[in-house]
Length: 509
Ligand code: FES
Image 1 (cartoon, rainbow, N blue to C red):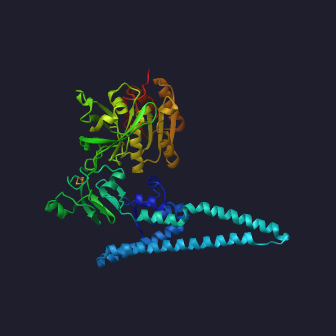
Image 2: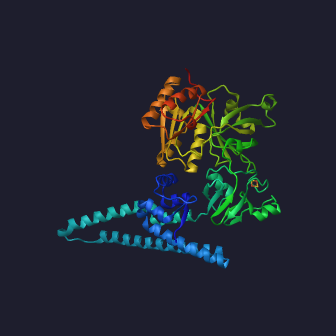
Image 3: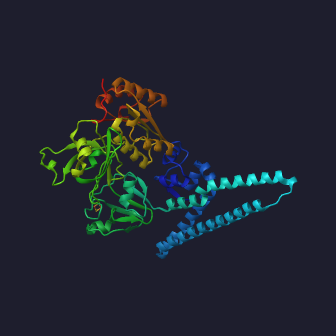
Protein backbone atom coordinates (compact mmCIF):
# COMPACT_ATOMS: atom_id res chain seq x y z
CA UNK A 1 0.00 0.00 0.00
CA UNK A 2 1.41 3.41 -0.98
CA UNK A 3 1.67 6.00 1.76
CA UNK A 4 0.54 9.62 1.44
CA UNK A 5 2.81 12.06 3.24
CA UNK A 6 2.45 15.72 4.07
CA UNK A 7 5.34 17.86 2.79
CA UNK A 8 6.81 18.12 6.30
CA UNK A 9 6.63 14.36 6.78
CA UNK A 10 8.26 13.77 3.40
CA UNK A 11 11.05 16.26 4.12
CA UNK A 12 11.81 14.66 7.46
CA UNK A 13 11.72 11.13 6.10
CA UNK A 14 14.34 11.68 3.43
CA UNK A 15 16.27 14.39 5.26
CA UNK A 16 15.80 17.30 2.84
CA UNK A 17 14.29 20.76 3.30
CA UNK A 18 10.61 21.35 2.67
CA UNK A 19 11.73 23.95 0.10
CA UNK A 20 13.54 21.20 -1.89
CA UNK A 21 10.32 19.25 -2.13
CA UNK A 22 8.38 22.37 -3.16
CA UNK A 23 10.99 22.98 -5.86
CA UNK A 24 10.44 19.48 -7.31
CA UNK A 25 6.71 20.15 -7.31
CA UNK A 26 7.21 23.47 -9.13
CA UNK A 27 9.43 21.68 -11.67
CA UNK A 28 6.65 19.08 -12.17
CA UNK A 29 8.99 16.34 -10.98
CA UNK A 30 6.73 15.47 -8.08
CA UNK A 31 2.93 15.38 -7.95
CA UNK A 32 1.10 16.90 -5.03
CA UNK A 33 -2.48 16.01 -4.20
CA UNK A 34 -4.36 17.91 -1.52
CA UNK A 35 -1.04 18.92 0.01
CA UNK A 36 0.35 15.38 0.16
CA UNK A 37 2.84 13.39 -1.91
CA UNK A 38 2.97 9.65 -2.45
CA UNK A 39 5.96 7.76 -1.01
CA UNK A 40 6.77 5.94 -4.30
CA UNK A 41 6.72 9.29 -6.21
CA UNK A 42 8.99 10.77 -3.56
CA UNK A 43 11.53 7.98 -4.05
CA UNK A 44 11.55 8.66 -7.80
CA UNK A 45 11.98 12.41 -7.31
CA UNK A 46 14.80 11.92 -4.77
CA UNK A 47 16.53 8.72 -5.90
CA UNK A 48 19.74 9.55 -4.06
CA UNK A 49 18.04 9.93 -0.71
CA UNK A 50 16.34 6.56 -1.19
CA UNK A 51 19.58 4.95 -2.42
CA UNK A 52 21.77 6.26 0.39
CA UNK A 53 19.49 5.04 3.09
CA UNK A 54 17.72 2.25 1.34
CA UNK A 55 17.57 -0.06 4.33
CA UNK A 56 16.01 2.62 6.45
CA UNK A 57 13.47 3.42 3.74
CA UNK A 58 12.51 -0.23 3.38
CA UNK A 59 12.16 -0.56 7.13
CA UNK A 60 10.03 2.57 7.20
CA UNK A 61 7.75 1.23 4.50
CA UNK A 62 7.42 -2.02 6.35
CA UNK A 63 6.64 -0.19 9.58
CA UNK A 64 4.07 1.88 7.76
CA UNK A 65 2.47 -1.15 6.15
CA UNK A 66 2.37 -2.93 9.48
CA UNK A 67 1.11 0.19 11.19
CA UNK A 68 -1.62 0.86 8.64
CA UNK A 69 -2.64 -2.76 8.73
CA UNK A 70 -2.67 -2.86 12.50
CA UNK A 71 -4.45 0.46 12.81
CA UNK A 72 -7.19 -0.67 10.44
CA UNK A 73 -7.45 -3.91 12.35
CA UNK A 74 -7.41 -2.23 15.75
CA UNK A 75 -10.04 0.27 14.73
CA UNK A 76 -12.26 -2.65 13.83
CA UNK A 77 -11.48 -4.21 17.18
CA UNK A 78 -11.75 -0.94 19.03
CA UNK A 79 -8.19 -1.37 20.39
CA UNK A 80 -6.28 1.42 18.67
CA UNK A 81 -3.94 2.15 21.56
CA UNK A 82 -3.03 -1.54 21.91
CA UNK A 83 -1.93 -1.58 18.29
CA UNK A 84 0.25 1.48 18.79
CA UNK A 85 1.86 -0.12 21.84
CA UNK A 86 2.56 -3.32 19.87
CA UNK A 87 4.11 -1.22 17.13
CA UNK A 88 6.40 0.49 19.65
CA UNK A 89 7.37 -2.83 21.28
CA UNK A 90 8.28 -4.23 17.85
CA UNK A 91 10.43 -1.21 16.98
CA UNK A 92 12.13 -1.29 20.38
CA UNK A 93 12.93 -4.99 19.97
CA UNK A 94 14.48 -4.35 16.58
CA UNK A 95 16.62 -1.56 18.04
CA UNK A 96 17.70 -3.74 20.95
CA UNK A 97 18.74 -6.50 18.49
CA UNK A 98 20.80 -4.01 16.48
CA UNK A 99 22.49 -2.73 19.63
CA UNK A 100 23.26 -6.29 20.76
CA UNK A 101 24.87 -7.05 17.44
CA UNK A 102 26.98 -3.88 17.69
CA UNK A 103 28.11 -4.88 21.23
CA UNK A 104 29.20 -8.32 19.97
CA UNK A 105 31.18 -6.74 17.17
CA UNK A 106 32.96 -4.53 19.69
CA UNK A 107 33.97 -7.57 21.77
CA UNK A 108 35.27 -9.23 18.60
CA UNK A 109 37.33 -6.17 17.65
CA UNK A 110 38.85 -5.92 21.16
CA UNK A 111 39.81 -9.61 20.92
CA UNK A 112 41.51 -9.00 17.56
CA UNK A 113 43.46 -6.06 19.00
CA UNK A 114 44.74 -8.25 21.82
CA UNK A 115 45.73 -11.03 19.39
CA UNK A 116 47.78 -8.56 17.31
CA UNK A 117 49.67 -7.56 20.44
CA UNK A 118 50.34 -11.13 21.50
CA UNK A 119 51.23 -12.58 18.08
CA UNK A 120 54.87 -13.57 17.60
CA UNK A 121 55.81 -13.18 13.97
CA UNK A 122 58.56 -14.73 11.94
CA UNK A 123 60.99 -12.03 10.65
CA UNK A 124 60.31 -12.97 7.01
CA UNK A 125 56.60 -12.11 7.50
CA UNK A 126 57.13 -8.95 9.55
CA UNK A 127 56.33 -6.48 6.75
CA UNK A 128 53.08 -8.20 5.84
CA UNK A 129 52.11 -8.42 9.47
CA UNK A 130 52.80 -4.70 10.06
CA UNK A 131 50.76 -3.80 7.00
CA UNK A 132 47.76 -5.76 8.24
CA UNK A 133 48.17 -4.27 11.72
CA UNK A 134 48.25 -0.69 10.36
CA UNK A 135 45.22 -1.34 8.18
CA UNK A 136 43.35 -2.84 11.14
CA UNK A 137 44.17 0.06 13.50
CA UNK A 138 43.07 2.63 10.90
CA UNK A 139 39.82 0.73 10.26
CA UNK A 140 39.08 0.60 14.00
CA UNK A 141 39.78 4.36 14.37
CA UNK A 142 37.43 5.17 11.49
CA UNK A 143 34.79 2.95 12.98
CA UNK A 144 35.03 4.75 16.32
CA UNK A 145 34.59 8.13 14.66
CA UNK A 146 31.52 6.88 12.81
CA UNK A 147 30.09 5.49 16.03
CA UNK A 148 28.77 8.95 16.93
CA UNK A 149 26.07 8.57 14.28
CA UNK A 150 25.37 4.89 14.00
CA UNK A 151 22.63 3.78 11.62
CA UNK A 152 20.74 2.49 14.65
CA UNK A 153 20.67 5.96 16.23
CA UNK A 154 19.66 7.54 12.94
CA UNK A 155 16.92 5.01 12.50
CA UNK A 156 15.75 5.56 16.05
CA UNK A 157 15.59 9.35 15.61
CA UNK A 158 13.85 9.19 12.27
CA UNK A 159 11.30 6.72 13.51
CA UNK A 160 10.65 8.91 16.54
CA UNK A 161 10.07 11.92 14.27
CA UNK A 162 7.95 9.98 11.83
CA UNK A 163 5.77 8.59 14.55
CA UNK A 164 4.79 12.02 15.88
CA UNK A 165 1.22 12.83 14.91
CA UNK A 166 0.72 15.37 12.12
CA UNK A 167 -1.82 18.14 12.35
CA UNK A 168 -3.42 19.74 9.33
CA UNK A 169 -5.19 23.08 9.76
CA UNK A 170 -8.11 24.11 7.56
CA UNK A 171 -8.87 26.33 5.75
CA UNK A 172 -5.19 27.46 5.65
CA UNK A 173 -3.88 23.93 4.79
CA UNK A 174 -0.87 24.61 7.02
CA UNK A 175 0.47 21.51 8.71
CA UNK A 176 2.75 20.81 11.64
CA UNK A 177 4.09 18.00 13.78
CA UNK A 178 2.51 17.68 17.18
CA UNK A 179 4.89 16.68 19.92
CA UNK A 180 3.05 14.40 22.34
CA UNK A 181 4.70 16.14 25.28
CA UNK A 182 3.13 19.44 24.18
CA UNK A 183 -0.41 20.68 23.69
CA UNK A 184 -1.69 21.22 20.16
CA UNK A 185 -1.41 24.96 20.77
CA UNK A 186 2.23 24.80 21.93
CA UNK A 187 3.26 22.71 18.91
CA UNK A 188 1.44 25.08 16.52
CA UNK A 189 3.21 28.13 18.00
CA UNK A 190 6.57 26.37 17.93
CA UNK A 191 5.96 25.69 14.24
CA UNK A 192 5.49 29.42 13.60
CA UNK A 193 1.72 29.37 13.08
CA UNK A 194 -0.28 32.38 14.27
CA UNK A 195 -3.25 30.47 15.71
CA UNK A 196 -5.70 32.23 17.96
CA UNK A 197 -5.44 31.80 21.73
CA UNK A 198 -5.79 33.74 24.98
CA UNK A 199 -5.31 32.35 28.48
CA UNK A 200 -3.40 29.18 27.53
CA UNK A 201 -5.00 27.35 30.47
CA UNK A 202 -8.44 26.19 29.42
CA UNK A 203 -10.46 29.19 30.61
CA UNK A 204 -11.15 31.66 27.81
CA UNK A 205 -12.11 29.35 24.93
CA UNK A 206 -10.20 31.45 22.38
CA UNK A 207 -8.11 28.51 21.21
CA UNK A 208 -11.11 26.36 20.32
CA UNK A 209 -10.95 24.45 17.06
CA UNK A 210 -13.17 21.88 15.38
CA UNK A 211 -11.75 18.37 15.20
CA UNK A 212 -12.56 17.12 11.71
CA UNK A 213 -10.67 13.83 11.85
CA UNK A 214 -8.33 11.85 14.09
CA UNK A 215 -8.10 11.52 17.85
CA UNK A 216 -6.92 13.82 20.63
CA UNK A 217 -6.30 13.31 24.30
CA UNK A 218 -7.02 15.80 27.07
CA UNK A 219 -3.84 16.84 28.90
CA UNK A 220 -5.27 19.18 31.52
CA UNK A 221 -8.51 20.23 33.17
CA UNK A 222 -10.48 22.92 31.33
CA UNK A 223 -12.92 25.38 32.88
CA UNK A 224 -14.33 26.56 29.57
CA UNK A 225 -17.73 24.97 28.92
CA UNK A 226 -18.74 24.18 25.34
CA UNK A 227 -22.36 24.66 24.28
CA UNK A 228 -24.30 21.55 23.24
CA UNK A 229 -24.00 22.65 19.61
CA UNK A 230 -20.19 23.07 19.89
CA UNK A 231 -19.93 19.64 21.51
CA UNK A 232 -21.91 17.99 18.75
CA UNK A 233 -19.71 19.66 16.11
CA UNK A 234 -16.55 18.28 17.73
CA UNK A 235 -14.95 21.44 19.15
CA UNK A 236 -11.88 21.02 21.37
CA UNK A 237 -9.48 23.39 23.14
CA UNK A 238 -6.04 23.25 21.58
CA UNK A 239 -4.42 24.47 24.81
CA UNK A 240 -5.78 21.47 26.71
CA UNK A 241 -5.34 18.59 24.25
CA UNK A 242 -2.60 16.77 22.43
CA UNK A 243 -2.90 14.64 19.28
CA UNK A 244 -2.57 10.86 19.51
CA UNK A 245 -3.13 10.22 15.79
CA UNK A 246 -2.79 12.39 12.67
CA UNK A 247 -5.61 14.93 12.91
CA UNK A 248 -7.33 17.67 10.91
CA UNK A 249 -8.54 20.80 12.69
CA UNK A 250 -10.69 23.66 11.49
CA UNK A 251 -9.42 26.89 13.02
CA UNK A 252 -8.69 30.51 12.20
CA UNK A 253 -5.13 31.83 11.94
CA UNK A 254 -3.89 35.41 11.88
CA UNK A 255 -2.58 36.20 8.40
CA UNK A 256 -2.16 39.96 8.70
CA UNK A 257 -1.57 42.54 11.44
CA UNK A 258 -5.28 43.41 11.61
CA UNK A 259 -6.01 39.88 12.81
CA UNK A 260 -3.95 40.42 15.97
CA UNK A 261 -5.76 42.28 18.78
CA UNK A 262 -4.06 45.05 20.78
CA UNK A 263 -3.09 43.67 24.16
CA UNK A 264 -1.91 44.99 27.51
CA UNK A 265 0.26 42.58 29.46
CA UNK A 266 2.39 43.02 32.57
CA UNK A 267 5.67 41.11 32.21
CA UNK A 268 8.62 40.51 34.51
CA UNK A 269 12.27 41.04 33.64
CA UNK A 270 13.83 37.62 33.13
CA UNK A 271 17.29 38.74 32.05
CA UNK A 272 19.15 41.89 31.13
CA UNK A 273 22.61 41.56 29.60
CA UNK A 274 24.76 44.37 28.25
CA UNK A 275 26.30 42.66 25.22
CA UNK A 276 28.60 45.51 24.17
CA UNK A 277 29.09 49.21 24.97
CA UNK A 278 25.94 50.12 23.07
CA UNK A 279 23.34 47.40 23.45
CA UNK A 280 21.43 45.68 26.25
CA UNK A 281 19.56 42.49 25.42
CA UNK A 282 16.47 42.50 27.62
CA UNK A 283 14.35 39.36 28.03
CA UNK A 284 10.86 39.64 29.52
CA UNK A 285 8.74 36.77 30.78
CA UNK A 286 5.00 36.97 30.22
CA UNK A 287 2.53 35.30 32.62
CA UNK A 288 1.62 31.75 31.62
CA UNK A 289 -2.04 32.70 31.41
CA UNK A 290 -1.39 35.78 29.24
CA UNK A 291 1.02 35.27 26.38
CA UNK A 292 1.58 38.07 23.87
CA UNK A 293 0.19 37.39 20.40
CA UNK A 294 2.21 39.13 17.72
CA UNK A 295 3.60 38.63 14.24
CA UNK A 296 7.34 38.40 13.66
CA UNK A 297 8.78 41.86 12.92
CA UNK A 298 6.23 43.87 14.97
CA UNK A 299 7.09 46.31 17.76
CA UNK A 300 5.56 47.11 21.12
CA UNK A 301 5.41 49.87 23.73
CA UNK A 302 7.20 49.15 27.01
CA UNK A 303 6.55 51.09 30.24
CA UNK A 304 8.54 50.68 33.46
CA UNK A 305 6.60 49.88 36.67
CA UNK A 306 8.65 50.64 39.76
CA UNK A 307 8.55 48.88 43.13
CA UNK A 308 6.22 50.51 45.67
CA UNK A 309 9.09 51.61 47.88
CA UNK A 310 11.10 53.09 45.03
CA UNK A 311 11.64 56.87 44.94
CA UNK A 312 11.19 56.79 41.20
CA UNK A 313 7.53 55.91 41.76
CA UNK A 314 7.00 59.58 42.57
CA UNK A 315 7.82 60.60 38.98
CA UNK A 316 4.78 61.89 37.15
CA UNK A 317 5.84 60.87 33.66
CA UNK A 318 5.99 57.10 33.16
CA UNK A 319 9.14 55.94 31.43
CA UNK A 320 7.95 54.55 28.12
CA UNK A 321 9.59 53.59 24.81
CA UNK A 322 8.77 51.50 21.76
CA UNK A 323 11.03 48.69 20.50
CA UNK A 324 10.90 45.90 17.96
CA UNK A 325 10.42 42.43 19.40
CA UNK A 326 13.58 40.49 18.59
CA UNK A 327 12.26 37.01 19.39
CA UNK A 328 10.06 34.67 17.38
CA UNK A 329 6.28 34.42 18.01
CA UNK A 330 6.90 30.70 18.49
CA UNK A 331 8.43 31.65 21.89
CA UNK A 332 5.59 33.74 23.38
CA UNK A 333 6.73 33.17 26.96
CA UNK A 334 10.07 34.94 26.54
CA UNK A 335 10.17 38.24 24.65
CA UNK A 336 13.51 39.68 23.61
CA UNK A 337 14.42 43.33 22.98
CA UNK A 338 17.68 44.95 21.90
CA UNK A 339 17.94 48.25 23.73
CA UNK A 340 20.56 50.73 22.45
CA UNK A 341 22.24 52.51 25.37
CA UNK A 342 24.35 55.03 23.50
CA UNK A 343 21.45 57.47 23.60
CA UNK A 344 20.33 59.84 26.23
CA UNK A 345 17.03 58.02 26.49
CA UNK A 346 15.19 57.63 29.78
CA UNK A 347 14.06 54.07 29.11
CA UNK A 348 17.51 52.80 28.15
CA UNK A 349 19.01 54.50 31.20
CA UNK A 350 16.37 53.02 33.49
CA UNK A 351 17.13 49.50 32.22
CA UNK A 352 20.84 50.11 32.50
CA UNK A 353 20.99 51.83 35.89
CA UNK A 354 17.70 51.29 37.76
CA UNK A 355 16.77 47.70 36.97
CA UNK A 356 16.70 46.74 40.67
CA UNK A 357 13.94 49.31 41.21
CA UNK A 358 11.82 48.05 38.34
CA UNK A 359 9.14 45.59 39.45
CA UNK A 360 7.68 44.82 36.01
CA UNK A 361 7.03 46.31 32.58
CA UNK A 362 3.69 46.95 30.95
CA UNK A 363 3.54 45.93 27.30
CA UNK A 364 1.01 47.59 24.97
CA UNK A 365 0.62 46.50 21.37
CA UNK A 366 1.73 44.96 19.10
CA UNK A 367 2.08 47.56 16.33
CA UNK A 368 3.54 47.71 12.86
CA UNK A 369 3.18 45.94 9.54
CA UNK A 370 6.81 44.98 8.93
CA UNK A 371 5.86 41.28 8.79
CA UNK A 372 6.69 38.32 6.60
CA UNK A 373 4.66 37.89 3.42
CA UNK A 374 3.93 34.22 3.99
CA UNK A 375 2.15 33.77 0.66
CA UNK A 376 5.17 34.82 -1.36
CA UNK A 377 7.20 31.95 -2.88
CA UNK A 378 10.30 34.20 -3.16
CA UNK A 379 13.69 33.83 -1.55
CA UNK A 380 14.49 36.31 1.22
CA UNK A 381 17.05 39.08 1.71
CA UNK A 382 17.25 40.80 5.09
CA UNK A 383 19.34 43.93 5.57
CA UNK A 384 19.73 45.63 8.94
CA UNK A 385 21.58 48.68 10.19
CA UNK A 386 22.86 48.34 13.78
CA UNK A 387 20.01 47.41 16.20
CA UNK A 388 17.72 47.14 13.17
CA UNK A 389 18.91 43.55 13.59
CA UNK A 390 16.21 43.08 16.28
CA UNK A 391 13.16 42.77 13.94
CA UNK A 392 15.34 40.83 11.48
CA UNK A 393 16.11 38.22 14.12
CA UNK A 394 12.39 37.78 14.77
CA UNK A 395 11.61 37.52 11.04
CA UNK A 396 14.47 35.10 10.36
CA UNK A 397 13.57 32.82 13.26
CA UNK A 398 9.96 32.84 12.08
CA UNK A 399 10.97 32.12 8.45
CA UNK A 400 13.16 29.24 9.67
CA UNK A 401 10.38 27.72 11.76
CA UNK A 402 8.09 27.85 8.69
CA UNK A 403 10.86 26.17 6.58
CA UNK A 404 9.51 28.24 3.75
CA UNK A 405 12.14 30.15 1.82
CA UNK A 406 14.52 28.44 -0.62
CA UNK A 407 17.34 30.78 0.37
CA UNK A 408 17.79 33.43 3.06
CA UNK A 409 20.56 36.05 2.97
CA UNK A 410 21.21 38.37 5.90
CA UNK A 411 23.27 41.57 5.52
CA UNK A 412 24.07 43.21 8.83
CA UNK A 413 25.68 46.65 8.60
CA UNK A 414 27.39 48.49 11.44
CA UNK A 415 30.27 50.91 11.87
CA UNK A 416 32.60 48.49 13.66
CA UNK A 417 33.07 44.81 14.26
CA UNK A 418 31.98 44.76 17.93
CA UNK A 419 28.63 46.29 17.02
CA UNK A 420 27.61 42.97 15.47
CA UNK A 421 26.51 41.98 18.93
CA UNK A 422 24.97 38.66 17.86
CA UNK A 423 27.60 37.72 15.35
CA UNK A 424 27.93 34.19 16.77
CA UNK A 425 24.23 33.53 16.31
CA UNK A 426 24.34 34.70 12.68
CA UNK A 427 27.42 32.59 12.00
CA UNK A 428 25.78 29.55 13.55
CA UNK A 429 22.79 29.98 11.19
CA UNK A 430 25.25 30.36 8.33
CA UNK A 431 27.15 27.19 9.31
CA UNK A 432 24.20 25.02 10.22
CA UNK A 433 21.73 25.86 7.45
CA UNK A 434 22.62 25.16 3.85
CA UNK A 435 20.10 27.73 2.59
CA UNK A 436 21.30 30.57 4.86
CA UNK A 437 24.06 33.11 4.12
CA UNK A 438 25.31 35.79 6.47
CA UNK A 439 27.29 38.80 5.29
CA UNK A 440 28.73 41.21 7.83
CA UNK A 441 29.29 44.72 6.50
CA UNK A 442 31.27 47.46 8.25
CA UNK A 443 31.18 50.95 6.85
CA UNK A 444 31.14 54.62 7.78
CA UNK A 445 27.79 55.88 9.08
CA UNK A 446 27.19 58.15 6.09
CA UNK A 447 24.12 57.77 3.95
CA UNK A 448 25.84 57.47 0.55
CA UNK A 449 28.50 55.09 1.93
CA UNK A 450 25.91 52.82 3.52
CA UNK A 451 23.70 52.73 0.41
CA UNK A 452 26.64 52.08 -1.90
CA UNK A 453 28.12 49.45 0.35
CA UNK A 454 24.89 47.49 0.70
CA UNK A 455 24.02 47.70 -3.00
CA UNK A 456 27.54 46.55 -3.99
CA UNK A 457 27.30 43.49 -1.79
CA UNK A 458 23.80 42.59 -2.96
CA UNK A 459 24.70 43.17 -6.58
CA UNK A 460 27.88 41.03 -6.36
CA UNK A 461 26.14 38.14 -4.69
CA UNK A 462 22.82 38.10 -6.55
CA UNK A 463 22.81 38.59 -10.31
CA UNK A 464 19.13 39.55 -10.32
CA UNK A 465 16.61 40.28 -7.61
CA UNK A 466 13.35 39.53 -9.35
CA UNK A 467 12.60 36.46 -7.26
CA UNK A 468 13.48 38.01 -3.93
CA UNK A 469 11.55 39.66 -1.13
CA UNK A 470 13.66 42.30 0.63
CA UNK A 471 13.23 43.30 4.26
CA UNK A 472 15.25 46.33 5.36
CA UNK A 473 15.43 47.85 8.85
CA UNK A 474 17.39 51.14 8.93
CA UNK A 475 16.80 54.84 9.67
CA UNK A 476 13.89 56.17 7.61
CA UNK A 477 15.82 58.45 5.27
CA UNK A 478 18.09 55.57 4.26
CA UNK A 479 15.14 53.35 3.40
CA UNK A 480 13.77 56.14 1.27
CA UNK A 481 17.04 56.32 -0.68
CA UNK A 482 17.42 52.59 -1.10
CA UNK A 483 14.05 52.13 -2.79
CA UNK A 484 14.95 53.54 -6.26
CA UNK A 485 18.23 51.57 -6.25
CA UNK A 486 16.38 48.36 -5.56
CA UNK A 487 13.77 49.08 -8.23
CA UNK A 488 16.58 49.65 -10.74
CA UNK A 489 17.91 46.17 -9.77
CA UNK A 490 14.61 44.53 -10.63
CA UNK A 491 12.88 44.39 -7.24
CA UNK A 492 9.12 44.89 -7.46
CA UNK A 493 7.59 47.47 -5.12
CA UNK A 494 5.35 44.89 -3.48
CA UNK A 495 8.42 42.80 -2.62
CA UNK A 496 10.18 45.56 -0.65
CA UNK A 497 9.45 45.93 3.04
CA UNK A 498 10.96 48.71 5.14
CA UNK A 499 11.09 49.35 8.87
CA UNK A 500 12.26 52.73 10.12
CA UNK A 501 14.44 52.31 13.18
CA UNK A 502 14.39 55.10 15.72
CA UNK A 503 17.17 53.89 17.97
CA UNK A 504 20.76 52.83 17.40
CA UNK A 505 23.68 54.36 15.53
CA UNK A 506 22.67 57.42 13.55
CA UNK A 507 23.56 57.77 9.87
CA UNK A 508 24.50 61.27 8.75
CA UNK A 509 24.13 62.75 5.26
S1 FES B 1 -6.27 29.71 25.23
FE1 FES B 1 -7.84 30.09 26.62
S2 FES B 1 -8.92 28.23 26.65
FE2 FES B 1 -7.25 27.81 25.39
